[in-house]
Amino acid sequence: MSIRTLVYGYGNPGREDDGLGVELARRVEEAGIPGVACDSNYQLNVEDALEIAEYDAVVFADASVSCAEPFTFNGLEPAHEISFTTHAMLPGSVLALCEDLYGKKPSSFILGIRGYSWEQREGLSAQAVSNLEKAFDFLLPLLRESAVRALEGKSAAYAHCSD
Image 1 (tube, rainbow, N blue to C red):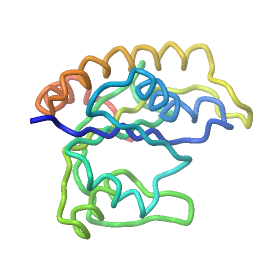
Image 2: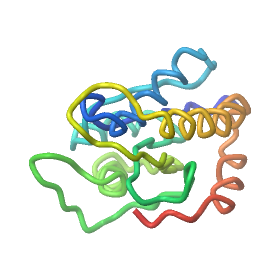
Image 3: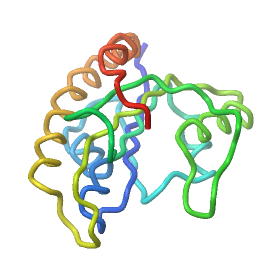
Image 4: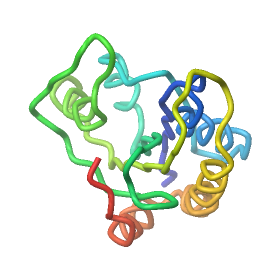
């Protein structure tokens, strides 16, 4: 059985390294992996709960100001304390909404890519590009395997990030 996987990158490409998640999703999409879809946005929204309900596995990709270099990869559980502002929701909140509204709980992971520069201009810092390439090289083989178990097994090894 083929596993349908979504790579969802979020962040603002107009704020330098904040665009790391969006850029990762773009690169994965260019790789054209069967069974893997990609989407991106400036931020996560309530509507994303419906989208992720259509998949067996979801990888949320975002820039991080404090995670270990070059990136972290962690399993994600629903955050039933749903809190959001007019600006954004947390991935765990989107997952909780998906479970509550649609009765679906895709295996979910968060890929945090370390960024360094957040000014209002486009383009990634050189260090962020290096981290992005390492994260991409890590994720691509896992996506090609289309195996949730492979993703889950890898998450423990990269569970260093708390944000």
